[in-house]
Image 1 (cartoon, rainbow, N blue to C red):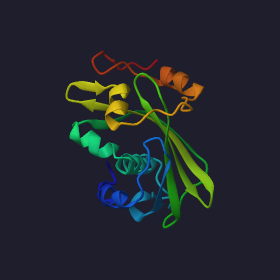
Image 2 (spheres, rainbow, N blue to C red):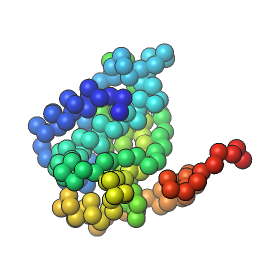
Image 3 (cartoon, one colour):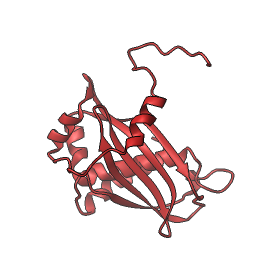
Image 4 (cartoon, rainbow, N blue to C red):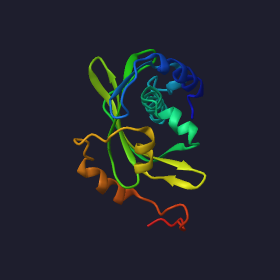
Length: 182
């Protein structure tokens, strides 16, 4: 994680904010720092994903899921992500990062994350995540049961995500994935 110092601060401060359900949206206030920007003086496109990591940690800490994850020695990993940019966030600009779970399938939990300034979306990402343990992937059923929350009945994965995953998937880590340009 690129923003390690910010993560350490967030892990401390998030516990002081009101608790939420793992299925609630959370808002994380931020400011674009010198270490976030590139030569164009706006947040570097790759930095957005590091900042989005922080939003997911905020949700996990405030919902109590982070304690469960650590107790079970699980590791959260990103399996796929896509982002769309609309406006640039510039040096020293204040913004919030909005994070919510938008659905699940048999393998992943999907997050929608946004960078918002002045009430407008500047960037939006969809991120497919999993939990892994030393024994391998942890099922979503086990995660939800262990976290102790019921999946809301209205939590329906957007239809385009299945097609996105099919069209961008690589073979599993235990199968060969030879490099050949097509």
